[in-house]
Image (cartoon, rainbow, N blue to C red; front, side, top):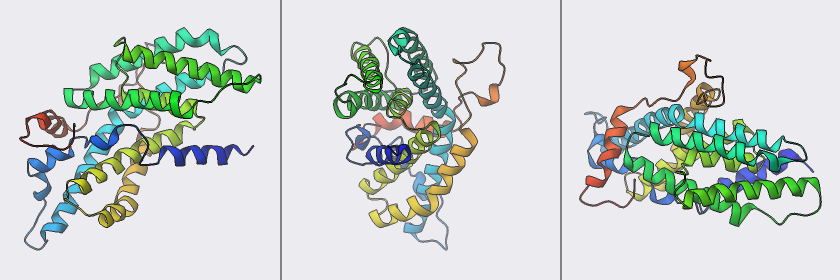
Length: 283
């Protein structure tokens, strides 16, 4: 079987905007950004309102992508590496359940600690558990007698166990950790998982802009192809080797490659989301 085709096919499935992950109700702070008037700050005497709003939208996406790549991508990467290690337990993946769950819970707790506002935490948890549910209900398949099917069954048991722990409030189930788990379980390479993670974040922001009627659907597609593409590629290139440190030797000192929030204004605006008199998104 063509593994490249298999991976591409799964990527197309995950890129489907109708995927039931809950991202449709999240604007990642864009609604608050618009409400507080930041979209119009880039206007000049020579530029029309529409052009200024478009420039403001791109500026928001650039800042949001930069801080999200620095703060969330390391958790995606380490969760993906953790499940990859679980899959590499040839023949006996069951023995790695407890150790794998323990590492994933540590990643989840660290992300909870590093996420600075309650609005972002709420949206991340809702989308994270939706991804786990998507795997167990939509992507998992009944196992057969082969070794490959035994591995798939073990992955299903692992992810179902993690989902039940989230439901039981034993852990948080944040989106970056769950995305790393999902993509590794589906056989997607780490680099493609990172790239798709940031692409979907950017696309979600543009979708929010369309529903807020600040830009049109054609403009959204134009920006996604021409303006956002280099931003996503740059962030993946700069942050693909970052990690949380949880999977490393505790004496390994490389603070520059650890997670960090780089856009304080975005955090402030996200916190103020619930203070808006009217809103259509939950974050």
